Length: 487
Image 1 (tube, rainbow, N blue to C red):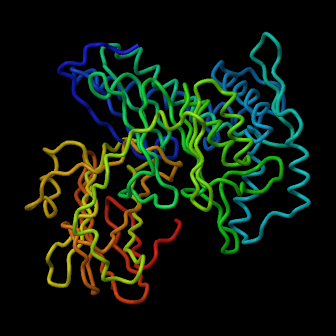
Image 2: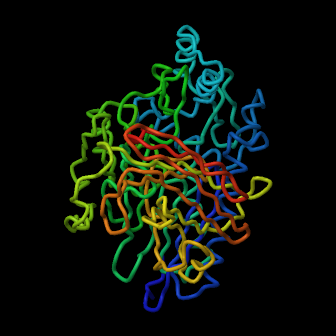
C-alpha cells in the first residue's frame, strides 16, 4: 500500500545505466526528499541482490553455478520461484516461454560471429532436447537438479520477477511515499498515483518509429499494475547481412518471425513479461486466446505490416488523444526528398568499472546551419530545471525542456544506447532547405564530466553519413541522412 497523503508531494527522478544490462529509471512521489533517496537505495539493493541469483551473464550467480553443478544443488527460494514461474508459463504458452534457451541463444550468437546460420540438424537436435523437462526439483526441499543438455536461462521472466520484488522492497522501506514508477529497460511497474487521484500515464513506443524523440504509439493508464513490451526492433541477431529477431522459438530453434511488438498490461511484471514474449512468437489468434484466459491482462500487438491488434478491453486503458497537436507550419511540405530525415544513434558511456553509479545524464542535442545559427533543438534529457544551465552552450537563450522518456514502455535496448531523429524542420515547424548542417551533442551529469562534440551531415538529394566524435561521456555517434532504417 502507498500513503494516501498526496498533498504537497513532489516527483523525484533517478536514473542509472548498466543495470541488468540496460537502463533504470525510478520516479518517486513523496513529500520527503529523504524518503525518495531511501526508495532509490532500496530498489538498487534489491535488484543487485537478485542479479547475483538470476543473472546468466554473471558466472558467479546462483543460476550459473546451478548450470555448472552437474548434479543436485540447494537453491534459494528466489531461484525456485523463478523456475516455478517458468514451469507454469511453459505449459500455458504452448512451450514458447522456456528457461532452457541458453544453448539455443549461444548458437545464434556464434552465428553472428561466423556469418553462417546454425546447422539445421543441430537446431533440430536441440529442439528435441528442449521438449524434455528442464530440471528436477525435490518435493518439500530446495534441491534442484539442472538439465544435462540445455543450460538454464531465466533472464526473460527473471527481469519481471526482479521488478516486482524491487517495487515491493521500495514500499517496505518507504511506506510514506505516495507512488512510484519503476522502469527497467522499458518494462514498467506503476504503483500508487502520479498526482492526486490520477494514475501514471505510460507511453508505448512505436516499433516502426521508435526513436527516443518519436511520438508514442499510444498511452495507457497504470495504477498498481505492470506493463511489458517485447519486440524485435531493439535487439537482434545479424547473420550474413540478414537481421533476425533476438526472440527465439523453442519449437523450431529459429528466431520468431511474428509480431514486431507486443505490449501487455497485467497485474504483475512476470505475467506481463511472459505474455509479451509469447505474443511475439505465437500467431495473433493463439496470443489473443492466451491473453483472454489470463485475468486482468490486456494487450496491443503490432504486426510487421503495422497493423494494430487489440485485446477486447485494451482500449479502456488508453488515454484518449487530444487532437492534432502539430504546429500549423508543420503542414508545409518538406524541402528534403520524400521521407528523408537525419538519424543520430548515440551511446552514453557507463561509469568506469561497469557499475551503475551514474545519475541521470543531462544531454542536449541540437542542429545549426552553415551560418552557425541554431535551427532546431532535437532533444533535451534531464529532470530538474536548475541543472540545465550546466549545459552551457545549449541553455543560452533556451527555455527549460524535459524530453526524457522515463515513462515509455519499449522493448529492452542495450545500456546507454539512444536514437533520435530530425525531420528537417526548425523549432517553429518550418521546413529547412537542403544544405550542410552541424549536429551538436552536449552532456553534463553528476558523477560524470562535461563534454561536447559535433558532426556535420550533408542534407541534399542523396543519402549521406557522418559522425559525432566520442567524448568522456558518450561514444562516437553515427549520423545518417535518408529514409530512417529499422534499427
